[in-house]
Structures are given as structure tokens and as C-alpha cells.
Image 1 (cartoon, rainbow over the protein chains, first blue to last red):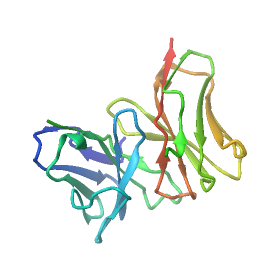
Image 2 (cartoon, chains in turn yellow, red):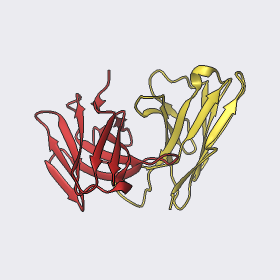
Image 3 (cartoon, rainbow over the protein chains, first blue to last red):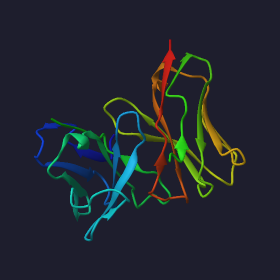
Image 4 (cartoon, each protein chain N blue to C red):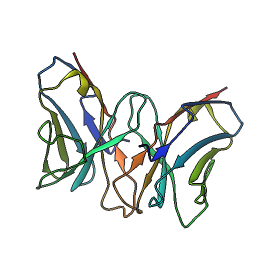
Length: 117
Length: 113
């Protein structure tokens, strides 16, 4: 079964609104979670690393004020797309690693398809 | 600048035959490579990996080959089954266990009964 849960799976919103996406680790505590974005026919691209209890680390070119990340607990990270615009329409996906499994691979959520009208 | 390339967006094979998915990379700092499989409406799931100290890793029907000099890796699925139909992503990182994965665009595999 899924070890990383992501909600919602699909969001359609109007331009200018904010959208929150949740990512939960289900049976392990994740001090670090990762947010990826995939535009159509493009690769999954790492946007930011979410760190529990501290600020997120953003990849080059990703606006931290637009993509707010909160990692308030060891099992939950949220990504808020603020004042969304049509160019933010994309597939957003989170991932986490189970710290009990050294060198284990990333577990991914099922993703969120965001469509901004 | 795409550091991990999967040049075939799609591949179709017959059930029972071999599926070969290819991946090329440009960054010589990459030393750990992974393949993920993704079904529609689901997140990618880990399939198999290989570190740069090896040139082959096998897990059941899945084998990954790494050619460091050519900066090329491939995933072989033998025999292919209809349930293998999915999008396969190649990913690379600069070290084992690194969370910073660089993904290819994916190859959609269709296995026909």
C-alpha cells in the first residue's frame, strides 16, 4: 500500500487563488520531504526540499514566496501555490524517504494535477 | 539542459518478448541510477537501481545495465507482461541515498497481449 499520501489528486481553480497540497508519510516519520513538479512532456523537476522545523530549501528558479512550504510535523508537509496563475498549471508530486531504511529509495505520493483557469 | 535523457517517448512490445528502455546522461558526477515505474493516477514507484561501481543489476525479470563510458543505461524486462505497461522514468543522483534525483522525461511502455 501507499506509504506517502498526497491530497488532493486534482484541483481546478481560478487565477489569483491559492491552493494547498498536502503530503503525508503514513507509517514513518519524515524529517525531510521533497516537492517535484512536472510540466506536460517534461521531466519531474525537484522544486524544493521541505525540512521539519526549519525553512525549506528551494531549487534555483523556484520562487519561495510563491510556493510556500510548511513542514510542521514529522508526517506532514504542505505546499501552497499562492496567487496561482495559468502558468502554474502542472503536476505536483511529493516524496519522502523512510529513515528506517538506510539508502532506501524515495516513496512518492500519487501527485496533484493543478489546473489554473 | 537536460542531464538525463530518455529519447524514446513510447515503446510497444509483445507479451513474452523483451522490453528494452534506454536512458542517457550527461553529468559525469552521477554515480547512482534508478528506474521508477508509474501507472496512471499513481505516483512513481521504485523498480531497480544501480550504482556506478557495477555494470549490471538484476532483480527477477528486471535487469539494469550501466555503461559508464557511454553514459548510458538500459532497463531490460524479460519476459514482458501486460501488467508492465506503464511509464518508466530513469533517474540519477550524485551519490547513493541522495534525495536530489534528476529525472528523464519517461518512456511509456505498452505490452500487448
